[in-house]
Image (cartoon, rainbow, N blue to C red):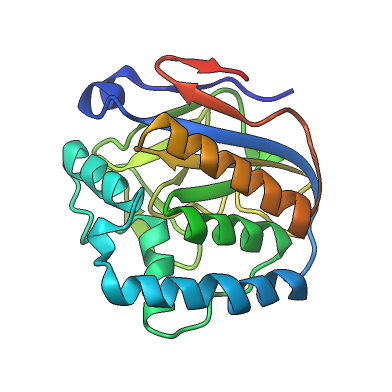
Length: 230
């Protein structure tokens, strides 16, 4: 059974276009897959390098709207980068993306191809309902591969134990590991509904193609105060 997921009214008041695209899978996490790496190296990366030569990061579709949302929340997107922007910067610099595991790699591929920040979380590490809200004064967590992150005014996901993920960086508490058997994937949407639906479909496709997974429910969108199932 999935936890209830909703968006805090205070966050919505600051940026009403906020929505979450959600997918849930039973998974068997594998090492990085060569078929995904071939797709990334032969299709995605060459296209993105060409695009990034002509398009400033701040103008990339869906990333641009995410940056606007951060400004509305009172956070500088130049200092606290959306996770998809961090991936684009690695591509632009000619660096290889980190190979993590099959689930995280599929997550990152979808993020690169859509411009949305996307996070995948171990459902068994989440307690109770989930809310997307703004970080509070003094809140922080250790990011994956990072030092302590100041969460104040950042959009984040929290459960009964507190914050565990967000559009900039996720915490180690609910990260995907080799022992993960159930996964929640969240697309942080600050764009139009049709763009989020497209991203949901593409993310579902990449999970089907590049992970050993089985959907628990159909992909769905959370908007307003209550989840809207499809």
